[in-house]
Amino acid sequence: MISEFRNHPLTDFSKTENREKQQAAIEEVKGQLDTVYPLYIGGQDVETGDLFKSVNPCQKDQVIGTFHKAGQEQAEQAIQAALQTFETWRFVPAAERADYLFKAAAVMRRRQFELNAWMILETGKNWVEADADTAEAIDFLEFYGREMLRYSAEQPVTPVPGERNEMFYIPLGVGACIPPWNFPLAILTGMTSAAIVAGNAVVLKPSSDSPTIGYKLVEIMKEVGLPAGVLNYIPGSGAAIGDYIVTHPKIRFISFTGSKEVGLRINELTAKPQSGQIWIKRVVAEMGGKNAIVVDSETDVDQAVEGVAAAAFGFQGQKCSACSRAIVDASIYDEFLEKLIARSKKITVGLVEDQSTFMGAVINETAQETTLKYIDIGKQEGRLVLGGESGPDSGYYVQPTIIADIDSKARLAQEEVFAPVLAVIKARDFDHALEIASDTEFGLTGAVYSRNREKLDKAKEIFHVGNLYLNRKCTGALVGAHPFGGFNMSGTDSKAGGRDYLLLFMQAKSVSEKV
Ligand code: NAD
Image (tube, rainbow, N blue to C red; front, side):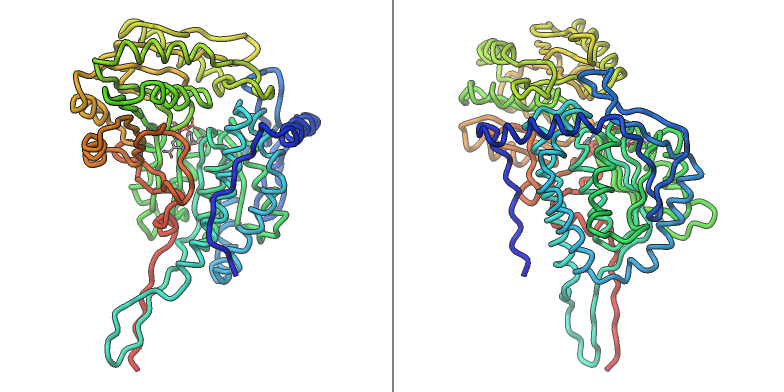
């Protein structure tokens, strides 16, 4: 009997025992740095000799792993291996498929501190953020396993005399999973396990900024005995093999999470049928955001400051859900800004392997350069009140940055920066704040701080985002509790971690028998 789904609890790092375990795991992982990792295709390790390195963004001379890079030849091999395996995997009973996910979740629970450590070192997540990422990956496995059991049960259809009718769900085929680096375990595990448990075979191309963590899922799936060819792992440059994979006529679906630019490109390319292609490809594309927190005049300013600081600067602002606009009622604007600056000045920036550090570096050199350029734009568009500079040269650091008095139409208010840069915008009143909040091409997350019930209800109706939070920060969605996905240019609103998600990887078949 499978118990009801519950979110995996976060580790309490105030306990000495947990701190010691995390510290020990970091040391252990440091002893395994710069291993050379192969591709994994059809159950075989594959080496190409064309290597790339993944480095610690907080300490750029520290190599985390060296990877054989897939080219088109390996992408083709992976697709062929998946196609072959799909012919058997699709007939494996749903309960058996779900069991692989439950077993993988158990392995992740056992290896939680180690997985956290890899994320701390490879992506610059602080301890708490890394721990939440692992917990979310565990949740996805447990949740989607149960969801598959639900979908494989008898589905209700209307009875018709003289007929025996049924409708059931079957998988789609071979799909490409293309995750980002920012939730390197959670998103990668979520999208991959959902596709697999639904009976599909998968080609997984991890981000080149977090391939080691992607490889950990491969290790775990090997450990639990997932049949060869169900999961094929091909790290490589998105630009070099991305088009090849997504336009391949045998690829049935693409599950992508990443930037708007790449998502739109995939959507466009896949819309055109290729020679030999006999279906309309399904595209799940979850993309960027320009998320706002609205701070009303009738609110506890300290609480709002806390929420904005955490959502803007947690994981260096590199969450799709991060707050990049604070829209503040004019009557409390100065008080809010003063308190936010004071609060944000307390943020520590540096090596996140030290538990006391809140913010690490941004993911890579390009991200650092782009962020500094946006800060320059922000200085012209508004008033720099905090940060604005890079950090020590040992990593790709950017200080927590606040730019006040930004116009709602300014670039800083419209374009995703994906870094610790917050635009503060003054609104005339609550209605004006809501108007500004929905006035971007995105629609991912948002939050409102207000004590006024009517205002909260109004926000619920008209703040146009996939995930709205009232009187709490706009980051930290929980699997099952807050199904996640955005509107407009934020993507296809797939609602990861929700009850509709697995449907994206299946098709329903209706059978009617005359009796
Ligand atoms: P990205 O678009 O640069 O890369 C995402 C993935 O796409 C990577 O694996 C990359 O290698 C691959 N890729 C790159 N070019 C490709 C191509 N031409 N064809 C196929 N694949 C290609 O994004 P990123 O920098 O990894 O992630 C950050 C972005 O992801 C931000 O915009 C963020 O808002 C978004 N994001 C969205 C969500 C969400 O749920 N909406 C969640 C996390 C991150």
